[in-house]
Amino acid sequence: MGFFDEMMDHQLDLSQVKDRGNKKWVAMMLPEHLKLIREYVDDQNKIPKPELDEWDLDIIQENIQIAMKRNVDVEVKTWKNGEFNIQIGSISWVDLKRRTIEMEDVFKSYVIQLDEIVDVTVLE
Image (cartoon, rainbow, N blue to C red; front, side, top):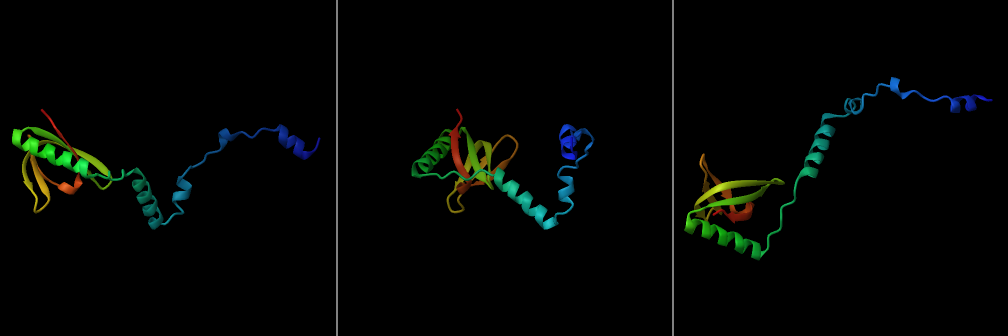
């Protein structure tokens, strides 16, 4: 039996190996590299903005008008920087010049850009 035959019969015990995982590689990276990697991971988690057609925009406009006439709450879904947000409240004002709507809920009032709105649902 030769040397290689003995090595093949002997099993390697990996329980004694203490690997530091990614820690050993992070120490070799420059801060610029780490920043780029973090930005890449953040970009992968972002949701692309939905493309709205004229039909979608008409429905949004109609729901805003209904909510203002009936003075009822709405759920406004917005998209900004790759994330969806939902605000619930009543629409107090629409400013077409600035392309914004002003909403109020129980706690505060806020302004939403019309270009950020992807859906409006009337809550009755």
